[in-house]
Image (cartoon, rainbow, N blue to C red; front, side):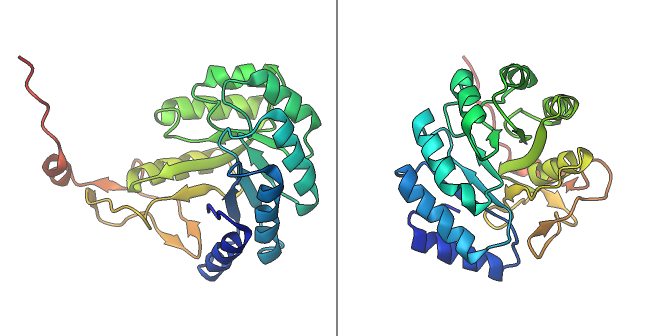
Length: 235
């Protein structure tokens, strides 16, 4: 959820609860750390027992991130995602040493070698597994294996995905035993016209891992060809 103000954040949380969701993620870094903390508190007040994940998308300085983390410490926030710039391993290492909230990295981890660097510098508590960020399942599996072998926790995330992207994410998270509620969306915003047969099943806020062959989602090859954009002829 975005929640540009605490009242909107509270309303969106209530709507999510009514739709069956039992875990929440909210953006921070939109304004001052103090105002962001008010938004987080509004979500927590509406969902006192829910896992709560906050994401800064690289918006803070080290000082700002610490101010927020210390202010929201009593709110039992599960993790603070990407509080500083992706290419600031030293700042993230200093933040992790001083933050009362676990630090998770997303944009910093394009390749498994990035994760190795941040692990060596002690710059994270959790790695965000995201198939789309690493360009597919091959590198995603390598990154998750490295995190697992290094004692770094994993949480799952995605983009606004088609049925294929969503299915790939679900298989990855299930394979590595990710238990924290994942940050996923797609079916409520986009159609997957190239899927033949059953789509990914979602009920009461839970996406179920497809059980069919491959990713468990059958592709309609004719629909893919119909949607294809011809390549321009180069002279």
